Amino acid sequence: MPVAGGAFSYIRVTFGEFAAFLTAANLIIDYVLSNAAVARSFTAYLGTAIGLSTETKWRVTISVLPKGFNEIDIVALAVVLILTLIICYSTRESSVLNMVLTAVHILFIVFVIVVGFWGGEWKNFTEPSDPNHPGGFFPFGASGVFNGAAMVYLSYIGYD
Image 1 (cartoon, rainbow, N blue to C red):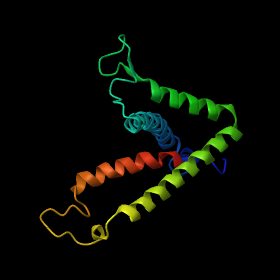
Image 2 (cartoon, one colour):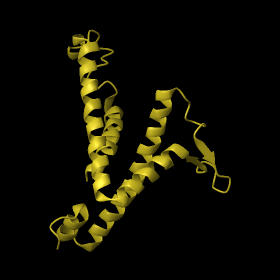
Image 3 (cartoon, rainbow, N blue to C red):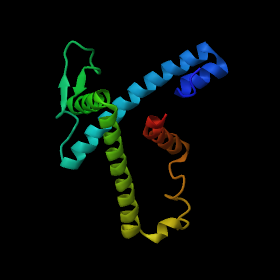
């Protein structure tokens, strides 16, 4: 038994082959769907950043596929293919890309923190003035928490 191997190895030792198979199948589906969602989100953010509507501009319709599943996002497909080629090419190049993207993420987080303190207002850290319209902590109830948890889950799936 290898000492490393992720969730599959640990589940296999702890719960057996069937549980490990279910875990591996779920992880594969999770990785595919989360990467597709992140790639589509990238297209939406890119379109917003450059001022284009991404609903129709960067999609190609394939008539032989069922309606509702027949649009391919060209930018998302290109991003996934380019990153896949870099990862498959060499460990060194994928490691450099990973470090560069991590540095960009850290710089962006620092930027958001600095701008938040610079342009924010201290009153946001206090109790709301109108309790009937709190707008502060927990403003969207349980559905807001679950929607936020889903987004955080998608954000951290790459660390497994």
